[in-house]
Amino acid sequence: MIKKTTIILILLIAVPLLAKKYKGAEYRSLDYYKYGKFEVRYKPVDRLAIVSSFFTYSDSVSQTGDWNEIDIEIIAKYEQSVQFNIIDPVPGYEIRHNHVQFNPYDDYHVYGFEWTPDYVAWFIDSVEVYRISGRNVSTLNHGQKIMMNIWNPEFIDWVGKWDDTFMPAFTYYDWISYSSFTPGSGNYGTDNNFTFEWKDDLDSMDTNRWETATHTFAGNKSDFLPENVIFQDGKMILALTYQDAVGFTDNNPPAFMWASANYNSDITIKYSEEMDANVMENVSNYILPGAQVLSANLAPNQTVITLKTNNYDPFTASSVIIKSAVDDWEVPNSVGLKSYVVFPIEKLTFPLKLNMGGEAFGEFIPDLLWTAETTHGYPQGNPKKWKPDIQNTELDQLYQEERIGIPYYLIKLDNGIYNIKLHFAENKFDAAGKRMFDIIVENEEYFSDLDIYAEAGKNSALIKEINNVTVDDYRLDIYFQEELDSAVVAGIEIEQIATGVGESQSVPEEIKLYQNYPNPFNGTTKIRYSLNKPQEVTIKFFDIKGELVYKKELTNNSKGINEFSWRPTTNRNQSLNSGVYFYRVEGENISNTNKIVYLK
Image 1 (tube, one colour):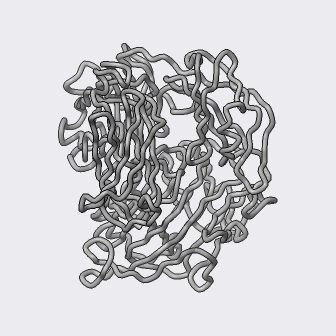
Image 2 (cartoon, one colour):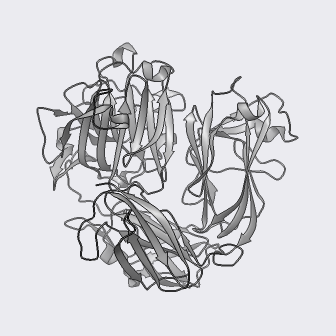
Image 3 (cartoon, rainbow, N blue to C red):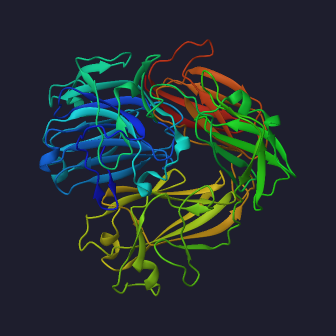
């Protein structure tokens, strides 16, 4: 895989194995493919500093500088984000952190892209989410091999800081398919311009189509071994291991990574690997001095445990005692009784004003890198200072100090309603159409293709306001999604309008129904709904004709956010066909309905 970190491209030129400490894996096609629709269904590894990929790459021209590569990379450093790239001779790279409304590490999803002479378009669960065209695409004109790999880069700013406790790590691939580009005569893909050629279910290795890699490249902590490509239980597993423990095996005990408090007095605990639910969801497994643990819930990715507490102060430093930590391996590995520090949360003062690229000045405080210890921050982005005077503002310093390449900003805070001001200035480009990005807040897109120059000109302040944003999960999420070049932001202001989800000023509805995620989906989907008081509700699913296909009474609901998982079946466990359905949650004299798309 290729990656830009700061302004550096990793040269993915195959070199002989160098006996590195870590061993990764790469599965690559024997043939080269020029244009087509490339798809894979896989579940990436939930480990910091590791890349799980699906991409095409022309190793036949890499050494000439005529680079050709199209990427899908999923990296655990980035929450609800999938990274798309192309790398070509001009301008060299195109990067997008694509926001998704699900956790990519919870389950399998279908990722793919269409590559034609005119465009490259990326898809998630069969829905197009991003497209580029123009001169970048026209230089992608060499046949490329299809590749999948798992590796640990050396670049902390891109993937996060490496830790040996992340080992071993596994990415799971379910199937992969290819359809050729046949404009005007196809039966698949956009405008039926593609023709299905083959699908590999990855039950075993097809040596007529695939090979395993035995090389490494600059910036890669590992080298690739055939032994770390494993076929088991109908899946292909790519492993990242130590050199003396290759293959699909785990003899290491689970490593505690961190514990962090939340505004609602929950405690989030992160482990290095998938954990055993029977042990980790046992309330008696936890001791919280001075407080009580009411429940312990293991997330679908099996690496995060959420403790609900009573009489716990999240703003004061504390510790949690875990009697036993057991991983979810065939022969379990475990850790005995230990005490761990819980990072407290900072009680923020509003209005919160953040200088995104510089030091504190006036009422503005500097931003932070998002970690388990911070209450607010960004995962990636480079500060940049400019000298020209800024028009239409008296806060020149704010707009002269910006952060470039920021995918999102997260802020832990109380549930309620907030007003947001985002500050921008275009200090680099001299024309419109050079930099564009989207702004997504709490999973809702507020601005599409924002072009700072087009709205304000160069070296001129631009403020975008987003008012009455409801936060109901104790965290405000602001995503900056690249459309062209890198996203940039100079400042963020947050004003608190009202607090307390469930109060009349915050959530007037008796039931607030959220869009299911993922949507579309092809396995299990999750439906979240918020209640302003504990009550029994009924969830119903209807087909496109309005006929009821599934119904369930949900009795153990609490005030606030609740969640229901659905696999498309009838109440008699009969499988449903692909198509459009509607789901409704009904409570006391009120109901809400949303649309859902199921793809087999």
